[in-house]
Length: 354
Image 1 (cartoon, rainbow, N blue to C red):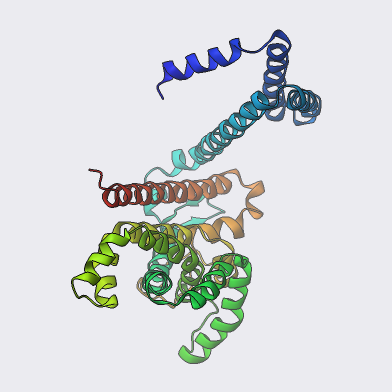
Image 2 (tube, rainbow, N blue to C red; image 1 turned 180 degrees about the vertical axis):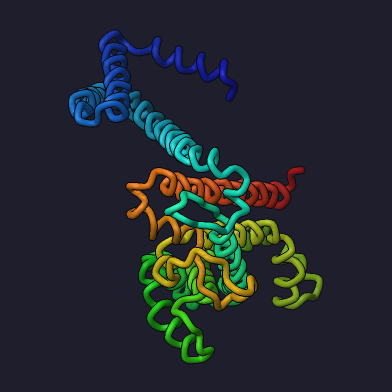
């Protein structure tokens, strides 16, 4: 719907209301704006306009329920966009001081010296990259294999038992994963490889790879289920076995959706905080050598989680942590856009659209 048609629709809806409904709507809108302004300027004054808005909404619900429901759902949607915009602007504004001070070295330097106010994100970015690669190598093959089994191979009784179990993995708190990784896997790795320190990038990647499995499996399964049955039936009718049909028809047809699932899983690995914070120590130096996956360093998320408390009295360090958040925001946003584009392309292809 174009902007002009939307304006006409809103004007027509307002014209259909009587004067009492228009006054109530105006009072509700003004009280909502006043509550928002009070929350920004003086949080203690937000109670009165919020109470007025609640009273107007309650009045509208009993007298003009349809119009009130439409308005409230619109406000809920609009508030989501407004909150996202405010968070984004605040994140970038808070990262400006350290960006001005450090310049390009903010992304290329591995120095993190709180006493000299010198901050570089290279160490954290490297740790995030290594753990994400390991997590992808864990979650991608296992996730796709699990989706193929559930969608194409497993009997109905097994599918009904396995799907809830996999979805239950997503409900386990990340700190529990991190605690298990630190207590169980860390002890095992130290005994097996005689590691000099507790925690390693390999353990973090392994743990968050398992945490990303529900996302990869669920989205991949949806992509496989979206393949038209006519394509599968045609393959079987030509003499192909069930496995040949899965391998040569279902998976290639759903490859875009499967790729989107893996990208979403990578996004989950990038944004994981508590598991990495529990397992890794607060080491702000690069591992030696760089490819040492059993080394102990820090990631962008674990740096934010472990240092935001002590950074309260250091404005430049706090700004550097916001800069780390900006890097994460941009990367995850890019991955999300790519995954949605791929998934939309898959739907168009399977739907016969060009």
